[in-house]
Length: 278
Picture 1: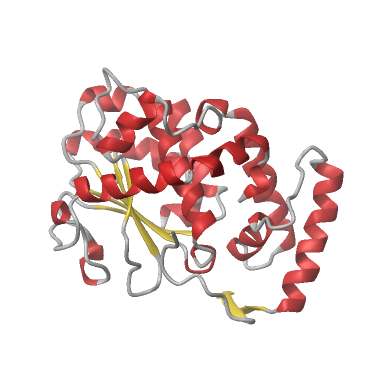
Picture 2 (picture 1 turned 180 degrees about the vertical axis):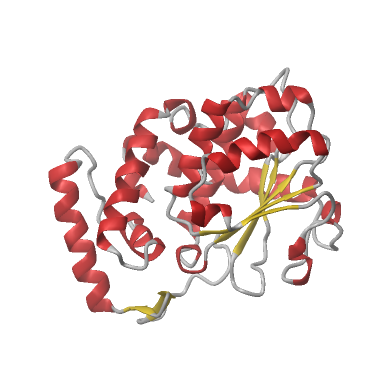
């Protein structure tokens, strides 16, 4: 199953007037491969991996920035085993979160060809579900998106955080140390986060959001929007009904993505062995 338009032209613009050509792509990937062999010799690169290409696009082919982001990406995945290991989707605790629908990509891109994902921050029960497992499911689906659709690395992602119904229990699951890990992961993922929009935000949650922003880079802070009500994305994409659109419901999207994740269970098994399967 493929999401959106995955065909890639010979030459594409990756931003700031930088044109990705076959020559630039080939020489840049070779440069990063040589660097990885020296700095991360345990990171075996599979022949069909697009991970290096994704990071080059994310940094608009800035070699130094690519090295920096890729280094942190690998270190984060090595360190945060609670998010990036044990990702068999048939595990009961993951099945429950897939049924709930904590991370829901829309099935259509927005008018700027960006992938839109809905992150339901308060859909789970904090007394029953560990926050680490919530983040694990989030990253599982994000990894799968990047695997299925190469164009996400070109046009990027818009994340809409629906905070309707958030409770003190949800907030207590996010101490500053957890928030810091989450922000660092987002900023070092090869998916170009273009917008982080927090909607249906209760006043008492602003304290937590301020902690999130304190760990963000200046560039990322500029991409944050906070709304007490609806989404500013309503003119760019058909939102789910819960956000005032006429698209599929959260339940319908959850059922769809649970099936996609289960169908791609071998993908997660391979990633346990080698992150470069992306």
